[in-house]
Length: 158
Image: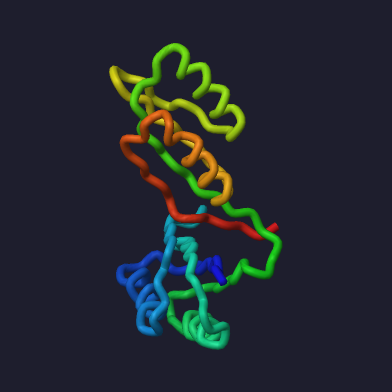
């Protein structure tokens, strides 16, 4: 089962490495990681997504995270009501006139937009849940995806 975990930490050198080290030391791969400052520049918000085979080990990791001196709070969103999103930027071959109309219709369906259109490329931006991002990427394949960049998942409780 995938778990989305947020960790509010003091914005100090080495904190990210210590947090990630707790997961890797127990054989958990972090499949998504997003880190940024909060309204307080001295505090950062980390969102991690991990696949947990053993719930007891994951509980132990969360307890150990709480014991780290620079960790302020740990939240597992898995069983909480929350909103999560991912951002993608997709570089496509520049569509012809007929394809451009199809592309724009598709982008409206997914609340995505063209943010840059130059010469022979177009860059698309979309923010959505992971399942919607996956659908959009599949729908964009016929347009000739040249490059893809995506953020890690970010989450916030209601």
